[in-house]
Image 1 (cartoon, rainbow, N blue to C red):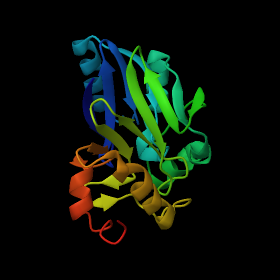
Image 2 (image 1 turned 90 degrees about the vertical axis):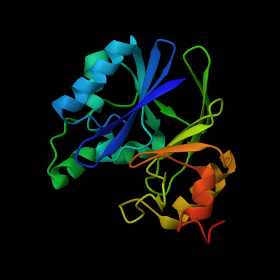
Image 3 (image 1 turned 135 degrees about the vertical axis):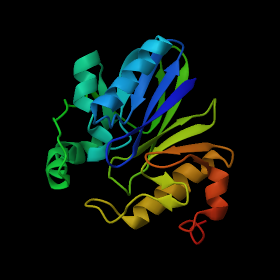
Image 4 (image 1 turned 90 degrees about the horizontal axis):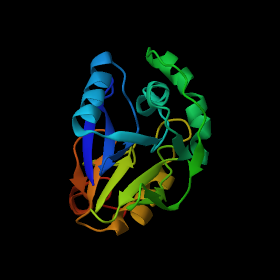
Amino acid sequence: MRFWRFVCNPYAENTYLIAAGREAWLIDPGFYTHSEKQHFLEVLEREGLELRAIYLTHAHIDHVLGVRWVVERFGVPLYYHAAEEVVYRHAGEWAMMMGLQYEEGPEATAYVEEGELVWGSDLLVQVHHVPGHSPGSVAYYFPKVERVFSGDVLFAAGIGNYHLPLADYETLMRSIVEKLLPLGEVVEVWPGHGPSTTIGTEKVSNPFLKDAI
């Protein structure tokens, strides 16, 4: 498994490209500017990758700005959690409020659920439903490489915004404590914004977790 991080749009959102062999999958395409899109295309061409699908951790506007462009360019399916449908369908309203240009993306090809997926021939992915920042937030965990893509649930020294519509602090903390922390201290956390961290680091240094563990 190989992966690339692209920092996109005015919110410095992390978009991830995951590859196994020549097959590739995209997590949270936040591409907004021409240069961001060109950089992504250059990586695909340089590495000889064939994009297979888009998977969303959640559907806040900064994580879906590039969905329509990617789907139209590559004709790939789109997957997210069913509970995130209400957020995805109101992304245009958020874009207007934030002064962002946004073209509504297509409907989900299918919904992801708690459990396991196999991308390509043998890339095992565990899907964890981790609501609290958003009702349909999910984290994608790759057990073979001990790496989790946490969306906006857990950050280095922080947690997701729980003041947004449909967000809830207690639910968010329960998701982190019950779903992410048990993955193991050596597991790398690659969040929707900011630098990577590890579960172990956050257990000892994240101020939000001190009273939750």
